Amino acid sequence: MTKFIDVSDLVTLVSKVGVETFLQEMHDYIRADFLKWPDFDKCARTAAHSDVGVIELMPVANNERYSFKYVNGHPANTKFGLSTVMAFGALADTETGYPLLLSELTLTTAFRTAATSAMAAKALARPNANIMGMIGCGAQSEFQAIAFKEIVGIQELRIFDIDKEAVQKLKRQLRMVAPTLNVATSDSPEDCVRGADIVTTVTADKAWATIMHPDMVEPGMHINAIGGDCPGKTELHEDVLKAGSIFVEYEPQTRVEGDIQQLPADHPVEALWKVLAGTAQGREREDEVTIFDSVGFALEDYSALRYLLDKATEHNIGSDIELVPKLDDPKNLYALLTARQLTNAIAV
Image 1 (cartoon, one colour):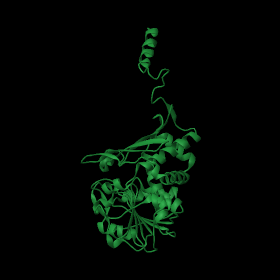
Image 2 (tube, rainbow, N blue to C red):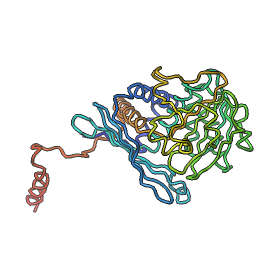
Image 3 (cartoon, rainbow, N blue to C red):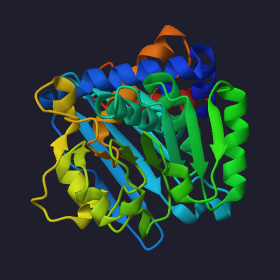
């Protein structure tokens, strides 16, 4: 049987584990898999782009497990009462191909994105970083704020969004779930990032946007750019990228989808996994500007699915479904139909 986790199951699981613990443990799973980076068969996601959004498939595998995620990105969806990003995914046994888990990944993606952001910041930001400015107060923002508080140690958060209702939504939610975090609203992006140790840009508009200009960058700042994640979608001015050391997940994918799509193909970047493994240098100086140009990579979803299966099994959450048939004779698939026909004939 295949474990199935729907949205309700995931909410139950998170409530049992706790949001902070859920983020921390998912961070640990992602970091452990990044340290095994060379063991994975990797490729950039397959994307079907349209004028209004994108639908993508994100596969990755090693000798033990295979996973994929189906995910969309449609910025105008909120007009129709739908999420900008929706996702589901599966985890399978590599040796047999048997599906072990089918799960929602919309809510899970928010957790894994926040955990990955915090993992990168912990490796690249200054050790004493405690002030973060966040531009964008949409669906990802609460997760980012809590992850940076719990994993990185952020104590003060400044927030800005052109949507004032989103700003108030974020402030209200954080007051409930992270009451010790000092949250302040800002009147402009410039005011939001002034004096910040870490800047997170997490906007959703599918456009060549410039959320952060060169005059907003300060010495020693770490920039967590996670909103630019497809061709033609950016958040950082080209000169911001040139002002710092850039770190990425899977370079072939980030060259096409990340903010570095603005730069020449030979502009140097470093793989985050190498920094985590200690085979490449992260931050070299106190005043160095570091940039995590994150587009989201399939290995993070693999880790998230692996974590979900372990925790759901531990807490007996989710249901077992017959996603693929169980056969007495693996060479006789048609027997499933004849068995039903026989049952119907007897009933008549």
